[in-house]
Image (cartoon, rainbow, N blue to C red; front, side, top):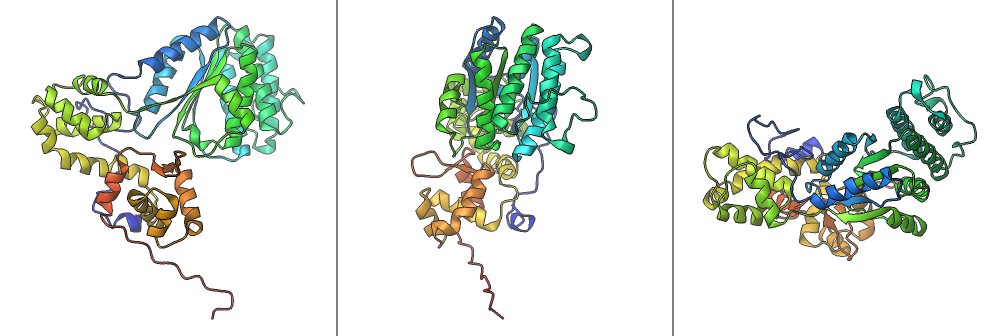
Length: 414
């Protein structure tokens, strides 16, 4: 949201949350909790994935999708710790929106780190030396923007320089997998915010990993992201479902919410029931409620009366931190579109509420999807990617006001 538009509202500007060191609750998105609850199935599956690949068996990995605040980043951080404890080389990527040139540049740098993590250059076996040549070839397509040119002399011309992301990544991944196998280890790509990759870029990753899967090489990918509104090609979809189990990371059950809250303080039964009803079991919301309650009175046993007494403070805290964070840089028309979705999530009706056609709203809608604020569930409606976001929108703009139409001067206007 632009500053001029943002300052129309009463919430104080907050770029981050300042947490007292003693407060046991962690309401910041991605902040590691004291204990990770409700995700045991994902953790067990990841450990089994690595164990199977270590035995030379092809294994299906997983990609998780979920709303903001469900713990996707926290889960991936746990996977990184697990892989590191088993001696795996880790390619840890926070995805960004880049064109294919930038995507290749990022992967060139990350694959360089992976190869050096497999084994120091001085102890490379022939497979690692071969992989270094393929990596050099892959990066050579970048020309003067090659991030390896100053230090990476190896390059096997023709091995990964066709210019096709899919073909070149396949060659790169196969070479890395062979190198890892020769050195008795494996490589795991851990990618957060997968929705930022284009369909073509994600498809290229899948095509490359599919070949390593068929060859039973110790290289894999585990990722997380928001729900996507676009789809892969039919061929890539088939390969994707062979490689990955696509799982939704939902809110915690009431039992797991109880474990989260009581792991950081003393709560009576009515209090945790109230907390679950208010937060819906979303980890970041439960952490925020606990944080506000602990700040209000750290010593007391939490009761349902105490929970109800901080509801306004809890809402204000979320409005100035979690919700505001996801709404930064939104303009007047974008915010109005979000407010219209609250009243009607059906595209044509959303536009009508704004006194516009769907075509006139198309660029606003596309921009909100690209920024990860909304997605299309597939049932003809539009949904928010942040839990309880509609409550924040209503508090911020109680009544929808359609922005005035901007007058566009014609060429012959004086």
